[in-house]
Length: 293
Image 1 (cartoon, helix red, strand yellow):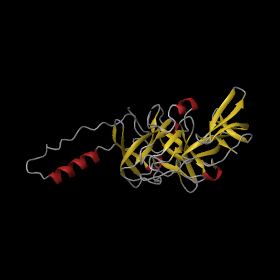
Image 2 (cartoon, one colour):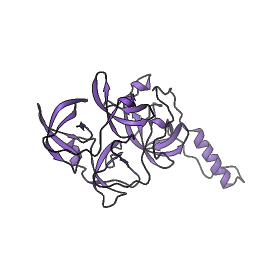
Image 3 (cartoon, helix red, strand yellow):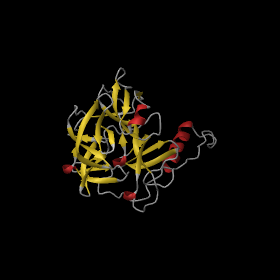
Image 4 (cartoon, helix red, strand yellow):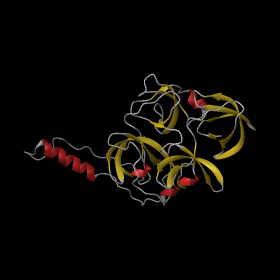
C-alpha cells in the first residue's frame, strides 16, 4: 500500500545500497558508517511549514526507536495548507527519534521524517486486562488506527480484542482478534493520552475528536472528517473508557458527527463495548467511546 504524510505528496523509495561496492581496502565498519550516512542524507524532510498553532516537537509517551506508531497519511493531496487536508492515521515503525521530529518507515515507504506532535507512539512492553480500551491498528485489514476493547487477556501482552472504530457488522467479523505484542497502548480512563476521545464545541455544536497530542494548554486532535484541529484543553471533555451503563440510562450520543441528547439505552453489550438505542431510523448502536452520561 502506498502511503503519504502531510509533508509529502508521494512516498520516498530508496535505492538499495550495495554492501560490497566500497573501495578496495575499506573496512566493514567504514562501509556501514557510509551506508548509514547515505540513508540519513536520503531522509525525506518536511516540505511545508507546520500549519497548526501547536508545538511541533511534543513526544507522546513511549516514543522510542523501534516502536510501532500511528502517523497521518493524506487521503487527498490537494490543499496548499496541510491543515485543510484530510488524514487517516496508519501504522509505521519508528527508526530514529529526534528532538522535534522522528524518522519512520512503513508499508512501501522508508526514511520519512515527521514532527513528533503528529506521531502517536504505541508502547513496546504493554499488558492489558479484560475491559481495558487500547489504541492499536487494524491487524487483519487495512493498517489504520483503531481503538479496541479487550475481551480476553489470557496472554496480557497479546490480548484478544473487539474493535470499536468500525460499524458493528464489520466488528463482528473480527471479534476476539489477537493483537501482536508491542502493538498497543492502554487508554487509562480520564487521562490525557493520544488516542483518547474528547468532546469539544466546534462551530457551535459538540463533536467527538480523537486526541493526537497534548500540551499544557492545547490539544491536537483528529476530527471525524479527517481534519486535524487545535483545541483549548480547558474546554475539552474526556470520554471515560471505563463508564458503566445499564438499560434505561439516558445519555448523549454521536449522530451525524455531532453529540446529541435524548438517547435511551435499550441494550448493553459490555464485553464488546457496544450500546443499543432506538431512534427515528430504528435500532442503532454506538460504542462506549461515542456516548457520554
